[in-house]
Length: 168
Length: 168
DNA sequence: TAACAGTCGCTGTCTTGTCAACTACTGTTA
DNA sequence: TAACAGTAGTTGACAAGACAGCGACTGTTA
Image (cartoon, rainbow over all chains, first blue to last red; front, side, top):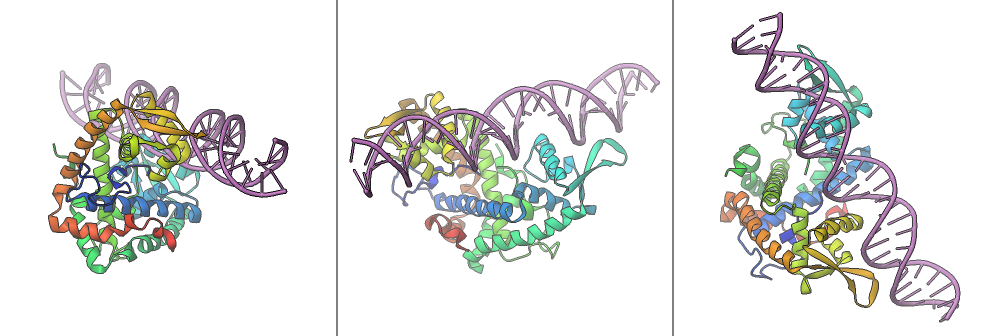
């Protein structure tokens, strides 16, 4: 969450013809800005309200959705955009805050199972509800039902077919 | 570029009714995934091809678009999502690579003007063309013209009205 | 023209994440 | 059952930003 605006300068459409005036330009710019803007607000809101960043909520939500509220590090890695070592550190912090706990995996002494504590579940519920409310306010309300439908359909392929994006 | 999936778990629509089954859910998920996916690919591609990250291209593109290819630190800050100190360091690195140069501002000895070097302009042009090509391949081609139009219209407000997002 | 609040950019220090290398364990092969 | 390639997770060293506070300069006020 830092830069990556590039095309999204303050320029008006067709201002500089050597710049991307392409068909997709405005759509891409919209996607870029919408996600950056909403995420930035969501991050600030969560930190202010709960005292932890979106990355924590992300991990906790993954655990919440998992059977018995637990996952192995490896599974957590697959479900997130973190590297293994990044996750180790992230889980360290959440664990230090008491929202998550590491347990041995029965039958595989190499493994670690990360489990949501009861306090973790409580904080998750609280945070998640508020978070959804915020996304609704910052994103949901700004589009009409028809627009939601159109955007959802147009962009569905980005989360449906896992690997197809970077073919070639 | 790390986490923030949360709702975007591998769950099917309506799988868990306590989870956001709201109207905006799929649209937001699409926006989130599209930007994360495309940006990740773009970052890797740029580093492999040019040896520098998107943040550099971002700064260089801002300078490219500016009069005489130069901007003050302050102006650069306004046009990006960086903090002042973050920019100082970022410009340090780009300058060390010879793509950008710091100059005094005539008439204000506090100020610094950051200018694209000729090498910087050359690398920018090269990188930018390839970057656009990539965005087209990873994003542009995956939508029909009608879909581009619909997405662009639905999300236009996120980059049009600067401050209105978090009015609450 | 002296005082002083405001602006400009940089620096010290901390946080967060990555990469590469490491230890511990597993399961297959001989 | 010894050897050994593969897997799980952690650790050390480093990169990149954020924040708070600094020194240098500006421009207005008295």
